Picture 1: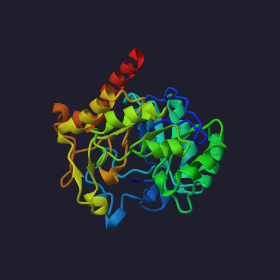
Picture 2: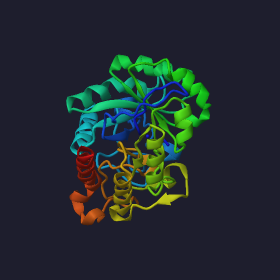
Picture 3: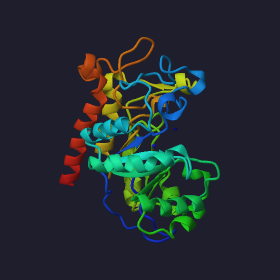
Length: 321
């Protein structure tokens, strides 16, 4: 991981009140890339000893090249992509107060707001993270207008600890990344998201969302185009994109499960090869060629265009139910 389902904070043991998700479609976003020109050095593109811009830590190569997340022009382009893909909410990776991702968050909020998007944060497992620190983070982030928090890997702490910390919050929704409905309920979360599109491939969505509904929780499973982290971290596991069929299958599973919301893994997690951001054809790198029959320049944005198609279908389904 480098990404939800909206969750409502309730004390452990209290009856859960089910509410509509505020965002139909959310997408996980990574603001951690750097370049010498903008940031003094490459960040993340050079993971595992790679030498950008010619060689980067990804199985794919971005159409924008090896960019800086601090470049406001890049940020504006990203937010326009996300809006045009029919997404409602950007969930920005966040590694604690004082981190580079924290420093870039105000610019992300501003750029997203300019195109009508809302912003949540994806609280990563930063050093010293506890349920109490996450609750304090959530309260502080409200100053930026952040009202929704996604917690990756909450099972590192006991559900009782989460319930004790989160029940004191007000005005904030917290998202739990887990496929264990009982854990989410006992922890005082209002729902769950899955994030991992390698293990959670869509076949469990119907069961997961049915269990969540019975428990009074919201269900927002994560969909993604594939997975390939071999170049970045050496992980031998690969989930092939199959010309777009992998992405379609996961979206179809989320709709069939009557999910409350859909989370997309991811806009630009290039290390794990889950990105839908535009990618260019380049020797020794994979590309999106022939996805849904697209070729050339059209293929570069094939996954953004397909997200718009599925977002519209999901939105129409929500209006009917």
